[in-house]
Length: 483
Image (cartoon, rainbow, N blue to C red; front, side, top):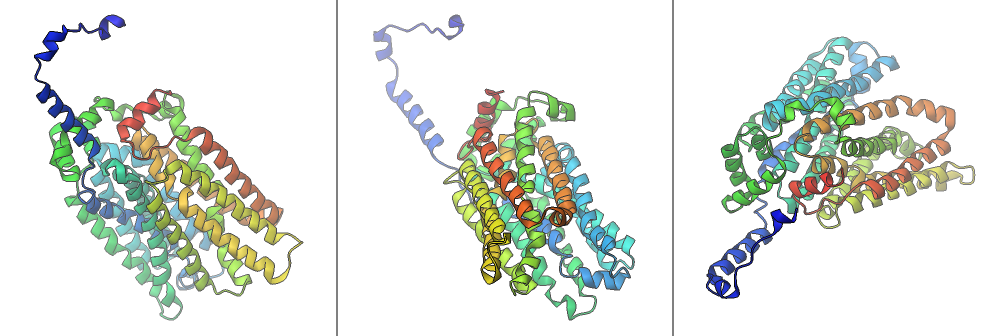
């Protein structure tokens, strides 16, 4: 070993003859290039275009909430709770399928074309839903939309992570959560006239075609991920995209750093068995567990049950949705400001801890020791606090952290596996929540959610590394040394 590292040292007098000024200038220029950050404005427009997919994701999650009664009346299944549940849940089934294949699509076609491909079923599905005359037509449209919803979020996380400068990657990653919140709030606002205007629910679906079309067209002018191009052996194109994203002065250092970890590995050769049993199992397990714990915290159950809690406190459901939306958006904005200052790990720890405390407030409000308005106000306050603390970390961080910790060779496909776990857990929590609430009661059920939040705190503390300010290659090298 020492024979490879040993260097013969020249005599002292020969050292004095070297051009010290040239060496100093070279070192100085290297330090300046390392210490200076690329301009963040260059990549910002492409990040904003990518987050349109997240806006659509949020919009389609909430688009049927207000109009569901009108939809069931117009399509002839009013009072059929199974049919109404299918209108909501078929979207989740489509999302599972879309997320399952998202990694192979993103690696095979590239990130830009994957975005365009996710927009197409959203456009078609929204049109089919808006023009449907029967329940089957509505379900077909919802499945198509769900497929695009499942494909969009993992590709958005990949793309934003790969094109963002390291020093603002957390901030840009938070845009995804903010766009999702805006989509949810947008769908609620658009649905307000549904009870006054006959057939307005069709307009709600049709309006979503506009941002989906913008996403499809605008992606044609966006930069492709240099990481994907480099893995494909298209080095010259990767350099050109780095210049668009980081500026000409940072191209050489970016490509050199990329070459440290991406050495032409064929990402197409990655199989599911390698992700689940190979040397990458640990990081895939961490990613899947984070998404599972995110859903087992009860966040979607809280969103589902929030209207009933607010109504019992005398707050109209429309105003309740506004309160929840504002809490979600406020937490996401604060997370954006703190992501690159405090770091991902710190936000995750305090977010899950805050969610656990919020659930304990719900348990206290449901206990027999508190009665009347005090219990109702405690329940409402606990619910708003839960949503706020979720948006501070547990909501935005997993989607940002996972593309950072996955090596470039497996990044897209590992994201697909983790997002599939997310949708499966999401489906079963939504399916079983009301049944478990009947069987166990709110105190026990909310205690279980609090326990999962505390379990998440322990899991994050033991398994999640900090990625703030590090390049993707630095993170990959650090993790590979632990495998």
